[in-house]
Image 1 (cartoon, rainbow, N blue to C red):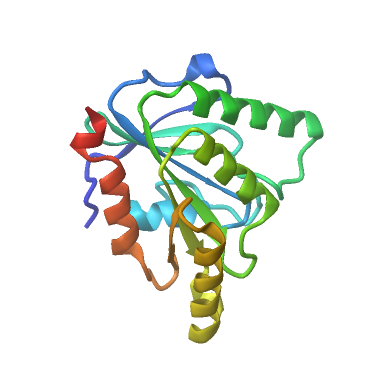
Image 2 (cartoon, rainbow, N blue to C red; image 1 turned 135 degrees about the vertical axis):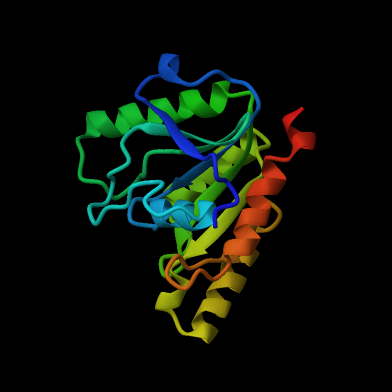
Length: 198
C-alpha cells in the first residue's frame, strides 16, 4: 500500500511560466536517461506506472510535477545525456532545468539517479556541482544494484561514497528487488518534512 494514497500527477511544464505555484516543499529527481529514474520513483511512491517507464531513453522531456501530499511535491526532471534528440532540444532542456533550480524557493532536496554499473558520469557531476553551488541537499540512488554481484555492488558503493565526500549521501537501490526502498523513502520524507517546509 502506498504511503502517498493521494499522490497524483499535476502537470508538465515546458517553460518556467508553466511551473506550479512555488509554495510548500518539493523534491526533484534527476538522472541520466536509462538510469532507471521512473522505475525508482514508482517504487518509492509504491504506485505502478506513477511515473511512466519506457524502454526508450529520454522519454521524460518535460518537467513533470506530482503531488504527494498537501503542499508536498515530487518533480521528475528530463533525463539527460543519452536521449537521441537535437542539440537545440538539449539546450532547451538545460535552460529549463537551470530555470527550475534557480527560481524554486520550495525546492528542498535532490535525488540523483545513477546506474551503479556506470558510476558517476560527467553529467551527474555537473548536476552535483550545481546542487552544491545552490546548497541543495542531494541523495544519490545507485540503481540497478541487482545487475551486480553483492561484492561488486559493495565496492561500487564505497567508490562512489569516497568520490562524493560530503557533497551528497548515497545508497544502493534496485527497483526490481526493491532493495533500499525504505531508506530512499525515509530520505524523501526527511527532505519534505514540515520543519524544512516552513
